[in-house]
Amino acid sequence: VQLVESGGGLVQAGRSLRLSCAASGSRFSINVMGWYRQAPGKQRELVATITSAGGSTNYAGSVKGRFTISRDNAKNTMYLQMNSLTPEDTAVYYCNAGVVELTSARYLEVWGQGTLVTVSS
Image (cartoon, rainbow, N blue to C red; front, top):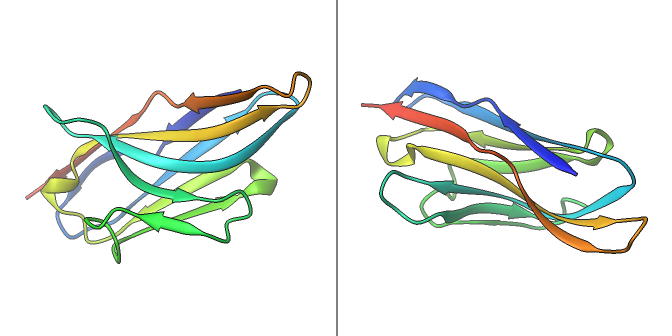
């Protein structure tokens, strides 16, 4: 299973961006998915998570009310709508998923390669 993020870029403070994370592979089931970010010189931190059916979400306090996580299971894709961006949101954003391989029943934690978001003041 592979996760590929897209949608990052350079944006001015106060603007919005939407990130996407597409999962590909064969015979797998995705459980919880999440977005993490790592700013220069800082540790990777949780941004938001969403359960398999999308019924439950969780946000870091710094993004609550500004970011919205969602997923489309039919497309094996997760999204992060980011509004009212600030320079403090500048980071590489990573997609994460808990995946069950249906052929082996193995549970894997999969990461994407990351997409850079830069917010200018």
